[in-house]
Image 1 (tube, rainbow, N blue to C red):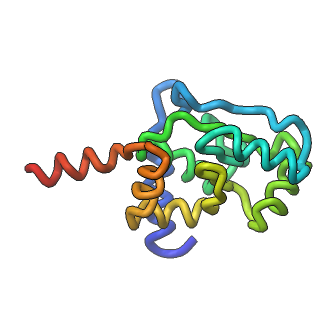
Image 2 (image 1 turned 60 degrees about the horizontal axis):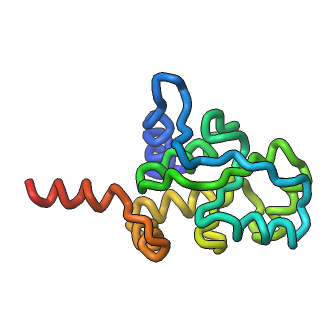
Length: 154
């Protein structure tokens, strides 16, 4: 990781851990992939929920810094209701999702069945405000809008 991306990711890694050590919100669902990496099965998984994330690990225990960064960014934007698939539990899923998206790395984020990207893309969208706009299309109001409004009124 380079320069500001590395500093931002490091800052996000320190944010948000509860006293119990977990990050799971009430709507975060650690889902079973069903053990198939077929294109048809993956298509069903990404269409099942508005927000779908394929991680190494779980939101409570991400197994890589990039997966951790993704699970830190989502709650910053009021995303608390999403499906999570742990690719470390299923080698077929891990390889299948890479082929499905034509993206070589994990984590992978899908919004409204569309592939958004990995950690680097999500972090960039978070930093430049594009994530707020994409979430509006899904009917999700980012809490960052409220924080900005509060700062502007001071």
